[in-house]
Length: 156
Image (cartoon, rainbow, N blue to C red; front, side, top):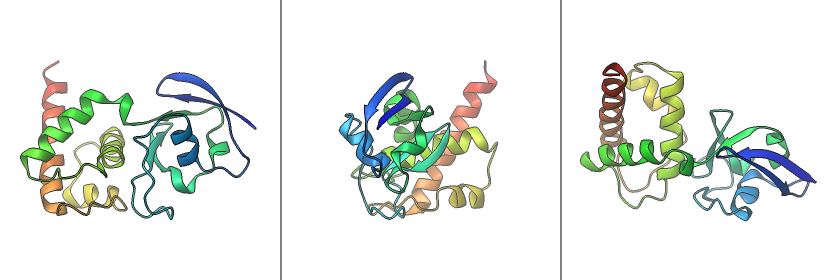
């Protein structure tokens, strides 16, 4: 089956199997930041944005993104660098294996929620597992990132 999709703003035609999961399609196409983790949709390592919403690619059939927009962390270099800076400043950035999926989830959250509470942030991030750091430092880093993003938007 031919999958017509836009990945990181580029039109693609990819040959896929009918029962192929999106994580496999993305990795075959060279998007190695889409990580394979649990294969059960529980860890968030395989997160991509589909039409701007976080999707677990290990539990999504590739055919479901036909004619849709899919984004990986490579589509957000400035945002990823800024969030990484804030996470590192709070001691939350360790091995980085979870970072692409985690970062995409934070980016999607900021597009959806304006000025979220701590509870809303933690709820939105539910399912993004990090084995290296505690979520308290991640929460502080996310809040600092959000503040800088809002300050930058307000100064324009």
